[in-house]
Image (cartoon, rainbow over all chains, first blue to last red; front, side, top):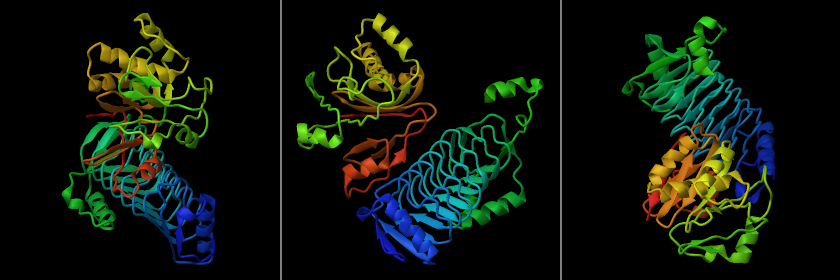
Length: 234
Length: 188
């Protein structure tokens, strides 16, 4: 695969060849690489450590754009489990649905899922921003430590379970809060941030009934006086 | 082997391509079908332990399963006490027998699927094929993958979208992950 290649037909290459070509293009300073026929293949565009725009024309599989620092990845299709896992900086935009664990252990940058997310969206987030245009599944935001998660749709059971810090905003209905996740007052600054973040994706933040979720902080330190809270969490 | 009046069960040890060469699966015609490629983590690698499983003595019912049924021994003992037979030591077989027991007891496929989400412990995403249709269930923690895509003509289910793309060709699909504890079923 030649370097500085601006378009790669995935059907003609192995996953290793594709990822090496992306990294070579980034190292050579190419502004963009476009990938056709990804066919929901796993582990594409992983560990890209330089700024470059990477565009997938079609669905990708598991672990797409994992362990990256700097690229802007756009997926015109769906993605499987763990898209943008541990992203340090840059962005990942999924113009379709996502599987489980989108934005898992996110540390920085921005992840956008236009459709629905699966279970454990944003699990163990440590920074960055995760925006989901649709619904999220079971235990999303589990053990969140920092960062911002914005869900325009509804949440399944267990949202924000055992979160330490960070903030979850929900525009739809909440099936049930997770252990030690509580609703906080939505401020004018929160509304301004939501308008700012969602305008990036042409979503009008005014059309939602926003709820702000934060940690209740009862699980920060063990206390036998909070026995019921610990029993529910464990 | 033919199991019942509607179900044709074909299995082989080896790569999926070998199954096509031996049995010409692509030429088979029917309203629905299920398949499975097994990476064995426990129990034997042989024909009887490969999937799809059928419930012995129960015609036209087969399952494929990804996961691990942790209350297998208790479930098997309870079903055996009711007279059901088991041919293997594989936990996936218990799902077929469990569903067969429910259906024989007069429950609908929907009822059986919903009950299974609570009665089966562990991780699972499984499909079941009956003469009337097909059903799917996923464990309450969504620990095993299952995506579904459907339109007015077809229903496609698989662990991963890459499999759907292989089968669907150029058909427009909008796959989504099944929710935790979600069950779906489609009848002819």
